[in-house]
Image (cartoon, rainbow, N blue to C red; front, side, top):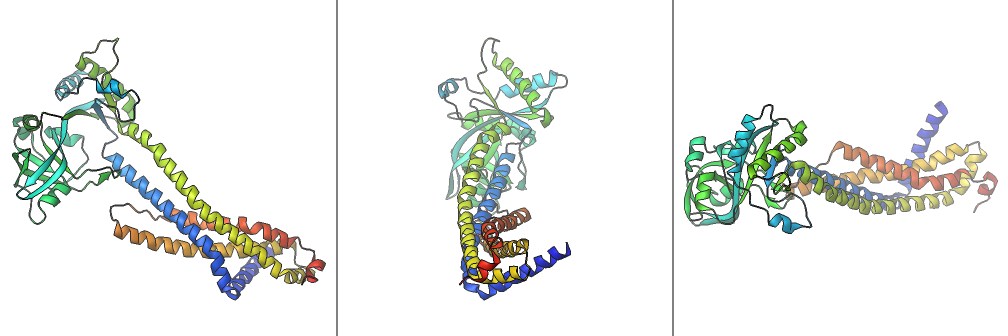
Length: 416
């Protein structure tokens, strides 16, 4: 063991001396590994960021909320069957809540009616278009995940009376009120004045497809008074125990069939959606992107490994006589093998360290330039990159090191 430790330390000294004596060649050789590590690290960081953004986007739907709608949250081939379904009505929520209250040990807590449409919002000379206008009840907060930057949500009295009050999203407030407070100001929605009583904190976007901050929420009776055409209703149902989501979904299916008056021989003419269903649809896409990205970036690391192998073979040829001398003086095959493995590994470690430094600086710059993109430069990623560097050095250096260890000392000493 003591001899092995000595050989290991001597091999590292020789490796450092070789890199110093051939600085330009070592740098150029390590360049392939540097580029590979930068590519792999940036891709790993991007995949981690995508995962964070994905999880954050999924969180807005809540893992304990079921969504009753006309369409399922997935691609369907027989879309015409869903198109011809009866519309979902907000009145269904009242019937569901009565049945939930009468059901002993129900897995459901409350049903919240919502109805939505896209409209423009105006305040004096400022206007924001394509804003999601949603009508609901005061209990909507039970199923939502947002917080308030300022103000409040409308209360039960305002909800039942259909008061012309609203809560606006962060982007809407920022666009209409860049230098003034929006609370108690009146905005025009569909030509009708609504008093702003609250501003929702920034929520971000859902997978970059649409902003969750471009929203206005108002009492459902007020919504139904002014927005009847092209609105889409949806029922949000809170589940008591998210570990029993399947049971809750079965219970809700039965209650919805009763509300819709469906006989036993007819199929469901509604869809009950959940976060997990959307996640299972999007997961294969996300995983395919990750696999394709790592494969492509892995090719650059493979090219770097070929360069390391090539230069190690050159080094073996250049030092054939030295190898013969060392073996004639008693060096064992293991010692020669270890020496060249350490040299190739040292080059890869140097490349890995430099590559990680560049990758960190690039991630820092990307984070500053695009603050909305979640950058994750984790310790696990650093550790993985260094392990990849070591493995690259060992694998790419093994064939040359094996060749060197098998040289005949007499032949090697006569090599010119």
